[in-house]
Length: 222
Image (tube, rainbow, N blue to C red; front, side, top):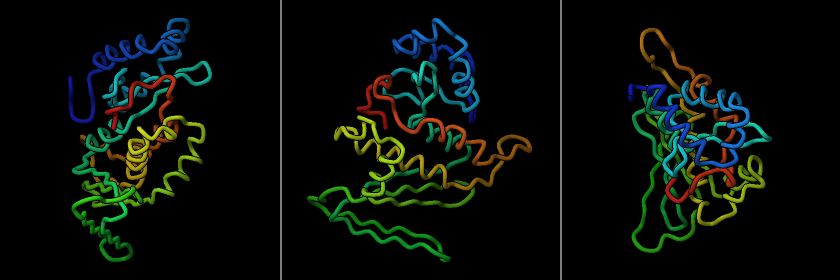
């Protein structure tokens, strides 16, 4: 069912049906007005991601004002990155007692991160590194900056306020940030250039965070 950068439509549809049935509010709307789910399903097909209703989902359906939207997980964004020629994508936590040196500017960007043995202290930041044919890209955010991001984009999200899921949400945010920053210099297939707008922005802008009421368990989702 799998090909480079895409999956078979019937495979996505089978998983989508399972995801809809397993999410009561989505199922209720889809049963009464099935057309409402089609735009989200077509979006999943076009992006080559598979909706499902478990913690391993690349994306899932969620209710927004009596309509159905598609929400991407970090796994979904990571899959798109590698489908578009990505070679490496890492998100690393930085703690108080780690030694970290970040160099940016006109010279080659560099991160040196040394982790000392023993107690590392509290989380102070995160960095993401992406490598593809367009080169190496990295982004760093302090813990405070990520909390400010949360206040701007998901001020009422219970997931962010739940300490069990805080690191998972920080990691997901860093995946979104690095995917926006990556530059692509590759072609998929014959004479088919890939742009950042085509690959990520149309989904990043719709829904960055889980709807707790509709999302599956997040214990292992990132």
